[in-house]
Image 1 (spheres, rainbow, N blue to C red):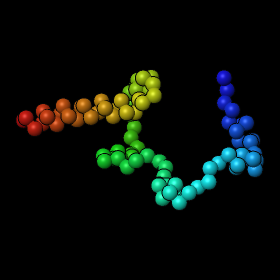
Image 2 (image 1 turned 60 degrees about the horizontal axis):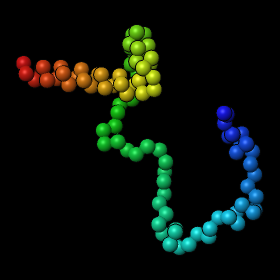
Image 3 (image 1 turned 90 degrees about the horizontal axis):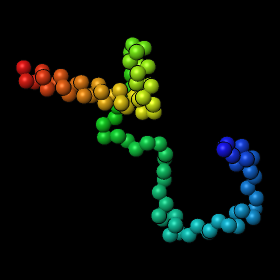
Image 4 (image 1 turned 30 degrees about the horizontal axis):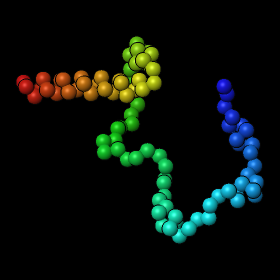
Amino acid sequence: MGSDLQRVDAHQVGAAEYDELPELTDEMLARARVNRGGRPKSAAPKVLLSVRYSPEVVEYFRSTGEGWQARMDAVLKEHVLLHRNRRAAS
């Protein structure tokens, strides 16, 4: 099973296809909303930075599959919470 994107890209829209589209009414236009695309703004955005990890660490997390960076972040957060609580107790 392959992609049919080439066939879709090659398709030329004909005049008859425009006849299938409904007329836009003032009511439809009044309900329209602009979608700028992209992800919604996060309440807690992450910080982009460049960091170096040992090959073993990267290899391990990558081997866990898609979402490995989020899992790595979760492990680091857990470490921070554990040590922050220890520091506060001292």
